[in-house]
Length: 233
Image 1 (cartoon, rainbow, N blue to C red):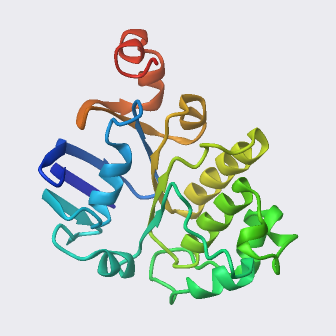
Image 2: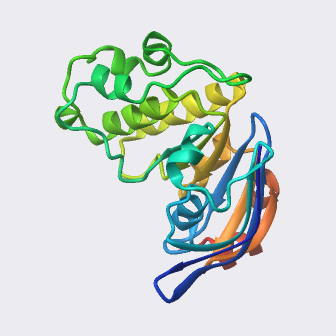
């Protein structure tokens, strides 16, 4: 589904990613884990074409997207859920979903408003509520639902558990498991290892923009030395 090879990226003159390589299979959840500043969100932005300067090879469903602008990447069926949500606060839940609607895609699940309300029961109770009058967790759900309205093959999900209530975190975990069952792939950026363990099949550990581990999630969680070296605070 996604193959990233030797990805470098810069903010201005400062290099922040160094040869990052990773892959995501169909219906698989891969967790990017690491401390603050490790390069998790930057990796997602680089994949999505949102870094002004990047190098390396990024192939999505057989198409080389390394030099494509982000809007063309999105049209190919790669969805992005940013950490800062970016919902339209003046629009209602229903209107936020409507503006993101794209045509059905061969081989990808087709999402409708009703199907998303079944996935996110909290949103079903507030279809006419403006985004600005929702809690942080509700806004997070809306951001994910809005991305799914584009019928993506793969979703880049940036820190979904950060700053939301434990009940919402549980809802997010259930949602990711449901997406995998639908055949949607997920690349997850996450600091919460407990959350990542619930949903991820494999993990990629980043530290200072470099990959330090790639393997099964359970293999990571059972390696005390690796956890202590690269993930302990």
